[in-house]
Length: 84
Image 1 (cartoon, rainbow, N blue to C red):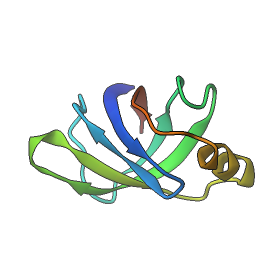
Image 2 (image 1 turned 90 degrees about the horizontal axis):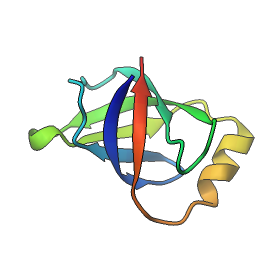
Image 3 (image 1 turned 180 degrees about the vertical axis):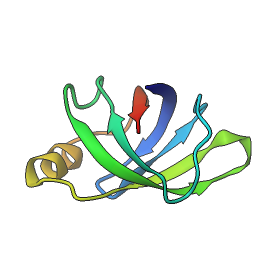
Image 4 (image 1 turned 120 degrees about the horizontal axis):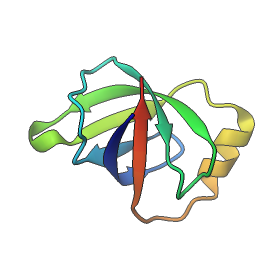
């Protein structure tokens, strides 16, 4: 598991900064954002890796309850963990 700063999240995806792991576009991950969605693991794929360590990802194959939980979130930042 690797820590990263969750910068932005929406029903479609999210962006990270200060990621402690080197990621590549197309890499499959799981997002564990315990302070936002306790106990929920969301499948995702890396879309872009930008200079400075910022990363953009999209969610893949979300279950209806996961999409609903994401839709209820209000802005803010949280710590997230990535698993491969």
